[in-house]
Length: 188
Ligand code: GLN
Image 1 (cartoon, rainbow, N blue to C red):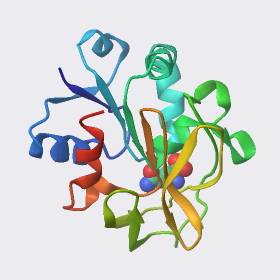
Image 2 (image 1 turned 120 degrees about the horizontal axis):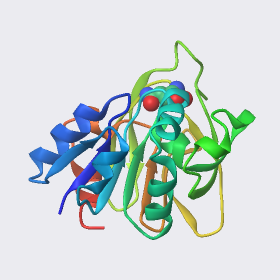
Image 3 (image 1 turned 60 degrees about the horizontal axis):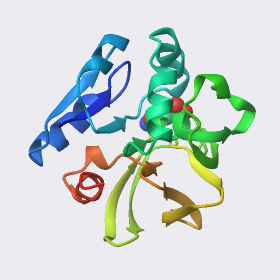
Image 4 (image 1 turned 120 degrees about the vertical axis):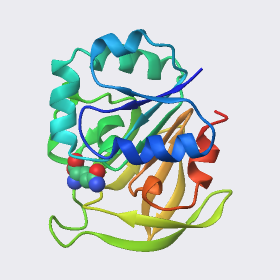
């Protein structure tokens, strides 16, 4: 079985590269017909969440993916992907009906500022120790709902969390050489 990577917009190629490096079979999900291919896991990459949300809805992929995630399919979401997973987003942009909204959390888009909000850091990650973290106009997790746990915080702000089989990261583990977050995801 394989990992599907949402590839309507954004940094999907880097995830594919990382997954293949780990020996995982990965393919791109561009349109509804791609959902017919067997896959057991999903990656939601970074990019522009408003654009991704619009394309997901237009390509009729939103409801089938939402259903599979709610049914327990493992997901690794990074940056814009975190926004798509969040049950609540500040200002409801992109709107809830265009998000997957399967992860109980409140997220804030572009929380570090729009243009100057990109930086690198090392952050503690539950079970992994310190991991390199590249933040690019990243969101922040303002609040976690019941059953969700924080995996990582930076400057007192939650930047990665888990809810069941869903892992959401505000930063971009696919842009660094360190494979440990993807390695954590693959056995789920
Ligand atoms: N700022 C983007 C958004 O809100 C996310 C940026 C990213 O994925 N690197 O959609």
